[in-house]
Length: 481
Image 1 (cartoon, rainbow, N blue to C red):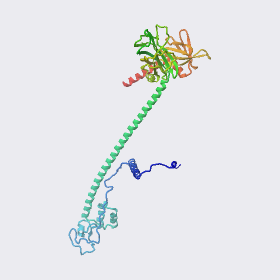
Image 2 (image 1 turned 180 degrees about the horizontal axis):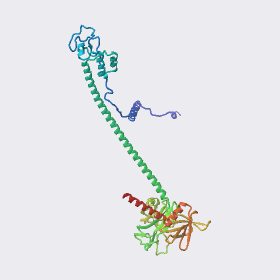
Image 3 (image 1 turned 120 degrees about the horizontal axis):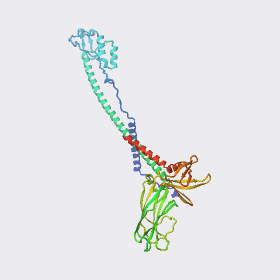
Image 4 (image 1 turned 135 degrees about the vertical axis):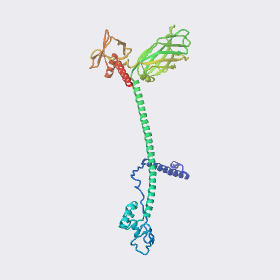
């Protein structure tokens, strides 16, 4: 009772817990870094510059005004006249940026008699690139602030240097961001091309896959329909004929089975063979109608021709799967098969005498599906009166309509030149076949099959197909020219 309650789970070590925690932190950091990089890539937008002038972001000059508490020069900067006696400097022009001054006579020679006009001229010409605070100081002084020509030239030269530097910086920035913009557009175009290529490839692959699925589905449905087949060129090669020294007759039984039920049976004529190695070929041609959901069984047997014994000796059996004919149904080409004769695997309902010694060989045959243009198979009803009808299993090939029914002999109607096929009552689905000495009235439960029977028996289906093919070829030739 105590042992059942105990849990024997392994205890994790300290180093393993530490490693797991560190690994978890590393994974979280990598995930956050990846998310940040992805967000930056998604939200990236190239910068666009629309600058009408090179001086939009020009750094404004902020000249340092001369401190009035400092001493100025006592002499005129032009004539070096001593002005120290005049303490108030009432007749002198004082520069706002340097300690130089001008006497009244020199000011007149420089045409600067009016302090207001000089300051206004300086304001209009030189202070347009000054800071807002300095321009406000000039305006509030009411024309009392004046800047000497030397300071004006220095300010203008520094301003030109600053403008040139800013212009070069702007050109460098524009070139850099233009390159970034071109690079971004190229990367965007490359990504768009890759995406469009992948999208086109995916669409084409989907189309190919859907086409294959649709084609395979259509082939399966087409192979499940009834088709007229011909089995011919049956050849055999036996190692030994296990009978007496006398001659024996070898023949082949061809059986078509649907699951466990036999739907068709045929037998070739006998070929006389000797005891030793035997080879032979039958010229018999079997015509039948079936789909691919059947099994073809070829059974070889031998009989002693010069004795009174009626025993039939089993020589071998070959089973052919009908699903291999699906491609032949689509292409209309014949298929040639070759297989080994083995033990009996399917009982065809006939007694055989089996020998202890195996004497099997090989078997080859050819199955050819007849074209749907000239053949047709399916159920038909012969109408005798309103209440009297007879069901037939009809097969049309080689311009002959073969009718078979359970417990009734087969009937063949040649569809020759003198045969007339007309509608007896098209509204009720009755058509009439008139021969030289007899006439028959047939109908079909399915209206589509009924019209198909009439079109193929009269040859209208083949004629319309040939006309459409000729018209298509003529249009194609005209298009090339």
